[in-house]
Image (cartoon, rainbow, N blue to C red; front, side):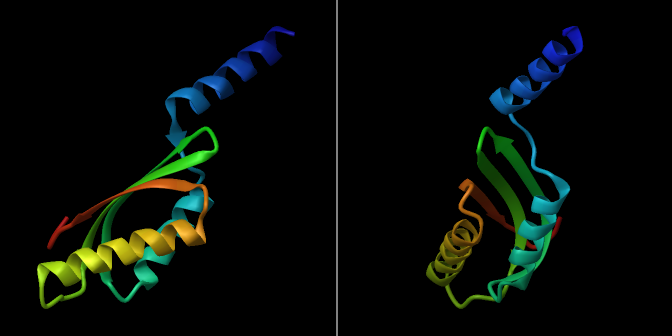
Length: 100
């Protein structure tokens, strides 16, 4: 009985304060982003499971864009498509950069 209580406490704590998503989900997110024409390279990816919802923070090198408006549009498109592909993702924080 004590073992079950400790196990449940650990699981509930992870759900309440957040924990990394499983490796499979993290790989799927990274592969999806790398397949996007707007993105040249993914430098860093953080994904956190918060209950049934996921938060993603990503630092990427974007494809060359002719204007800031096109860059913003490209980021917004990536965020929207990522959420469509993985409905559990509720928050996406995007950092475009030239290097890691």
